[in-house]
Image (tube, rainbow, N blue to C red; front, side, top):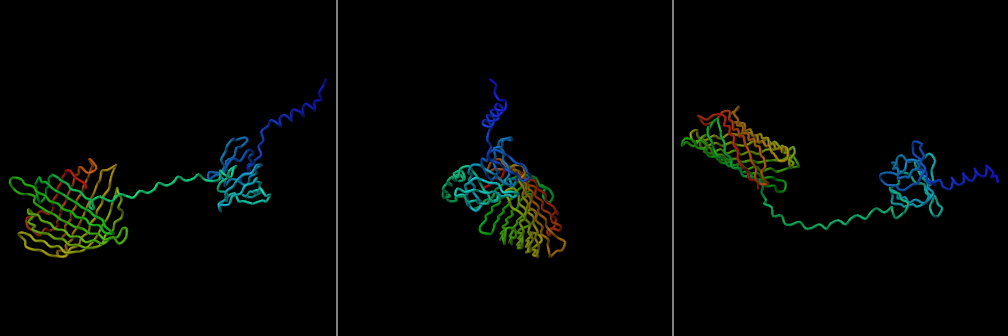
Length: 358
């Protein structure tokens, strides 16, 4: 029995068509490409499409020109509207037709689609986790002041040649738009039954900030130095300053003002004259916790033109624990024309020791 060859060919093609996979959806890109497959989703990342040749792909929505689906597809638009229906292409346009269940057609811009899914329920974003109930903050029991106390030992040269011990303290407090800083230094040293160091310095500085950077300040300082013959030195200054920045790791500020200088010497009597003040304060943290600081202050005398006093304090601090640090200080005190006789122009001291922070 002979079978018709044309019949065998027809049966073969029929079987191939039955077993071949069916890709009903199509995606058209703006550069002219066309993908056949299945539209599986739409999100901020792009359009998810199961391509016949490339497999699962995600295409940016801006590259999609139009779409066609056989089954209904749910879309969420930027205005909150939800549309469900088969998608039909719009020629030469970044738009798509949505054939709704009531056989009406809506024309939608690709750019207006926020999310898409094969099921409307999938359009709903996941429910956000409930925010934890804020617990009432415990009462602030921290001390209102912060500062440090340092016990140092070292050597000095210039006006005094001595090995001395020094106690340095600093306390700061901020309230409203003001900052108050108090400093106190005391030193004592003796060599060959002779007192080479016996001094006391007290200083208070109040800043009133006009904004985040600009401030007004008032400063009052007192000093006693027996070996230099200073029974009392008082410096009262007021002016304006500017803080460039103040972060946990770095700070830079400068100020300028005018005031009155009063000096009482054991051998030279009293001296009163107007003076100026210019200062620069800098702090920087290196590596993890090593801190370098510099406080530079210049006091030009207006009563004696050309005379000025320069004071510099450079510090290096390395923490040992949360409250204890090892610190080194280099202090310079220079006067162009000391009032008292037999007083050198410069006094330089290097000291090192422990610092406690509170």
